Structures are given as structure tokens and as C-alpha cells.
Length: 314
Image (cartoon, rainbow, N blue to C red):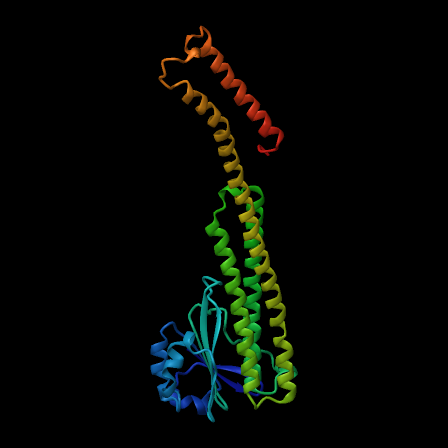
């Protein structure tokens, strides 16, 4: 857990430990990294009003809509898991008048508030909440850019494998990449909606701050556009994979059909002369056996030539 205070347009990290009941008076930002949300929810019961939101904190996947009261705004967000970017992970923001609490899983190691130069803050930020929400959006956009780059490489590798070594590519691999790309797009869209709702709910932002955040949030639209394009490419790969395998299956069926077409008349002839009737003149032919074998070969060659000319071997 990290505690920060906003002093003279500087973000100062506090080294001392404070219990939650003192946060509202002594700190402005609390960053909690934990995978045990029940433990965090029990710990935050000391803060006024959060005891009633226990389930909201413990089960963020089931509570996607924000909660607003006269004391705070609380909202759950979805993001990519650091170990598996296609797996959704959840973080929570609680905004009081002079305090922001951010609950993050341990996998969110990329997110740390760093000291910024005073002149940088003076140029961009007028208050604490504006700075931290801006910082939060910026860091998640940076993470999403990395996720997009990784996904793009995955799709390119599969494209090369499909073109050069499709026999070693399984339908499970293709479907997995297609589903993962869709999941990543869903994560981006949920983040965009979450931050948009948060900005619209928070009334203490000035018009300039709100406009600034909305313009910065427009970067998400570009990320979603790129993710959607990659999703379409992954879907195109899936269709291409299916067409290739359908052609391979059709070729195999053609081969089996040719074999069957050749052997059906041969089997018929063999069946006729396999009958045990007494009066079968051909049974007395001296060269009848060799004649029938020659007819078999001729019939097979003619059939193969016919199918070849019809393009069945292509």
C-alpha cells in the first residue's frame, strides 16, 4: 500500500503508515495492491460509508455500474491481466472530496504514481483528482498500446504459418487467437465506457478539465479502432483457415471418389464372373483370365485419364 499527498503541485509519497480512519485528513491518494479483495474490503470498513459497499468491492466483475453518494463515487474497471493480456482483471477507484483510493491487483505492477516536476503539473493540472485520473488513463492507454502490439505480432505469425505451414496449424489455435482478440477489444471498450462515465459523474471538474480529459480519452477511440481491425483480421484468418481445410477435405473426398469410381465397375465384373452357374461360356476361354485382367487395367487407365482431364486431381 502506498500513500500520497498533493503538496504545492507536487505528488509526495508518505513513508508513514496510517489507518483508514485518518486518510481523509492526512492523505490525498491511496494505492492498494492486493489479490485478496475480501481482506481489502474488511480493511476499508473503517471508512465512513464503505461498509455498505462490501459486495461491490469483493465482486467487481458483478458490479460494473458506478455508485454515487453525497460522500464519494465508487467504480469498478476492467483491464488486461499482466500475465495474460486477454484475461480481464479488475481495479476499483473510490473518489472522496479530497481523497482517491485505487485498489489494484498485484499484476498491475506497471501502475505507480511517480513524482512529477512542478512545472509539468502547473502546465496541465489544477487539482489532485484531475491529475490522478489523467495519470490513470495515460498509464492504461500505454499498457493497451503494448497489448495491441503483442496481438498484432501474434496475428502476423499466424498469417505466415497459415500461408507456409498450414498443415501444422490447428483449428484450436485459430479459434483461440480469434477469441482472444475479441476479448481484448471488449476490455478496451469497457475501459473507455468506464472512464467516460467517471468523468461525466464527477461534477467538481471545471469545464476546461472535463474537456481536457475527454480529448485525452479520445485516444481510446483510436485504440478500439485498431483493436477492431485486428479482430477483423483474426476473423479473416479463421475463414481463410476454414477454406484451406475445406479444400484439403474436398481433395481427399475427390481421391476417394475416384478410387470408388474405378473399383465399382471392376467389382461388378469380378462379381459377375464369380457366380457359380453351370452354363457360363467365358469360363471355357483359354485366355479369359488374362483378357479380363487386361480389361480391368484398360478400364482403370481410361477412368484415371477421364478424371484427370476433368481436373479432379488439382
